[in-house]
Length: 119
Image (cartoon, rainbow, N blue to C red):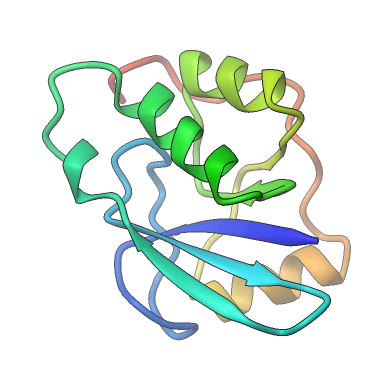
């Protein structure tokens, strides 16, 4: 399973970015191989609109089946859900911390967006 995590830095010690669509990077972790890939999302940092939808398309294109982030807005949530990606919000700490929270079952799948658009 591939898990995408919104992050403001590069690597497992980087902090989870609380914003999904405007996160600086996505780290994709493959639970089967242990491999990680960091993908730049800077094109959406200052986008006037559509950042969440574009970020959702990126995460889907990377083959992620789950997303771990701090918060997710309504349009991004809808796009991710339509792609069959499970969304886990409320993650804090480093990317490693978020993965540990996920593996321990301390993150629950979100049922809806938890912030308004353009958050």
